[in-house]
Image 1 (spheres, rainbow, N blue to C red):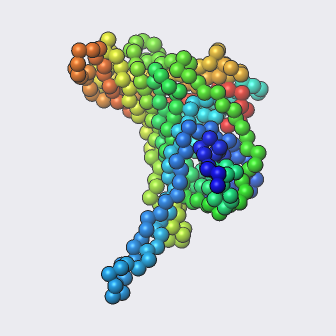
Image 2: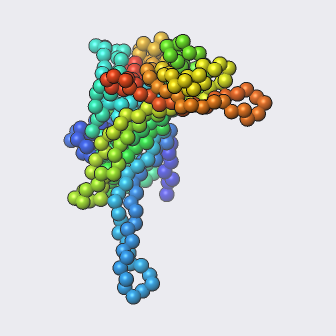
Image 3: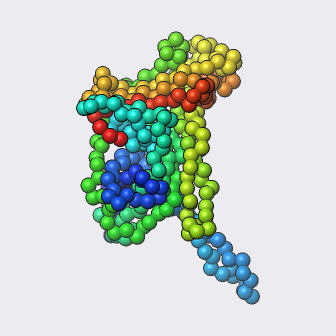
Length: 326
């Protein structure tokens, strides 16, 4: 028997218009991944019945869970799908390519996602395909460092799974293409450029605070819904301690504006000139100070949390590429 491999596996996804329901005419998108661990699970509910034997009776399956992560490289063609399901549908401008897609809390999150995993032709159906519906993005962490491909780790929750299917829901999914940004495309601006600090790493996490504890007796053991709660944007970084500016902001409880960008070429959005800009206009740094752990250069790890003042949280992501719709 042939061995299934990750290299020959693929994931497609379709945006649901009604939660936990596959659209009648699914228009799926090919999902580029580094890893994908979404899977079903169910606790074994042990029957406590006494029957005169020391051995236990056969248990039953309890509530069904669907959960896992996707790790993806940040690329202009494919990251828009994840931003839509993390932040909300974008406001798109441009009558022809290139297009500008602005993701903010001004627009609601889509109802959900149906994922389909194809383990490849080495596995006979049923068993070749696993399908997960009623999925939503609980949170995503974007990792920006001085080496390695800029990436995001996306936490997923879902409602239902199906491993009995014999054919794919879409044999010709849309392929957005994949050409990831690299560290040479990465730039960081603090306080509009007035705060100059050397950061060696920055992680930005957007949480949707999904309520994963909604279950109903009539739902056959599957999750009833995944409504979003607060939009919580936090992060952490490591700064070279060659200036006290971040230390002073932390000790004096001062706001910090953060803008991180990935820009290829001009960044205007034409082929070879794509860009992504994540802007956090207001954040505060937890109180901290550099530690002395040896003779070499000092560093200051720090944590931050974004906040709003008047109106909605102002964190945005602006993507410029050739796609007319996300």
